[in-house]
Image (cartoon, rainbow, N blue to C red):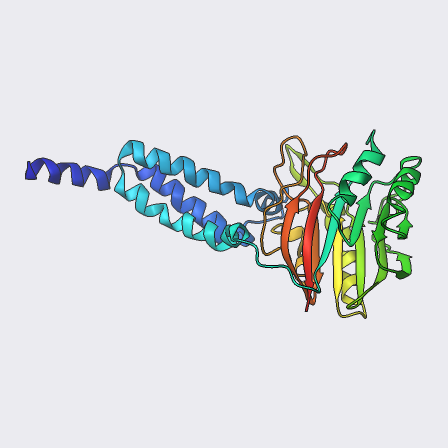
Length: 318
């Protein structure tokens, strides 16, 4: 029996080299995703868009290791598990208690093809936020949003196809020029306004960055990246200390294309809140970020008539 157990033990370490190698590769992609080149097809950004989903690869490799009874593969899987936990484990932790200075904000791309703007507006208001940021506002739906939200959100600012509704007074609303070079059509997708909350003045930015496409040549995101750079410059020049950015940024917080924003702003500490596409959410491209404030928790709200899910966040000014 001892010889049999010894033979089985040797084979347990020797077999499963393929899943072990894949585990090491997965760990490398998680830990060193920034070194994946973006020069051709923006492969690095494409990887970073779906980076959390490498957790499923770990699960599959774990099952493979068990089937193969491979101790080598099981030990190797500790590497990607540790890397994934370091990157995303904090998003799964319990949410702390809310504070008296917290702001609840909602971000939603309502879709220019939404057939129920009134129902969408009511669903967002039911979450009880202080601020509601909307994108893809088009007539006549804009009038419906204004009318439906007016009672609870008497203060609003709309520039182009983006808008901000607030329980608190707004001032200094202006359009942001984040239009990429080469876009000839009328294009106004950014605004900035000061929000006068009971606990101080904050700057609220609402943005809708250009869409990206995935094709055989990779990720087409050059216009999105250019617009993110312009928005980052505007944020850097903002004189108010506390800033909240709400928008459909067409990129995840891990995507290096949004580095002009994520290098300046805090992202959510808790919650995955995958928001797109609404039918089968694969990525959170609807973002709430903050400066001199903490985005303590981010969550999705029930589906509306849009192809995006709304996201709600609790923001704590410092």
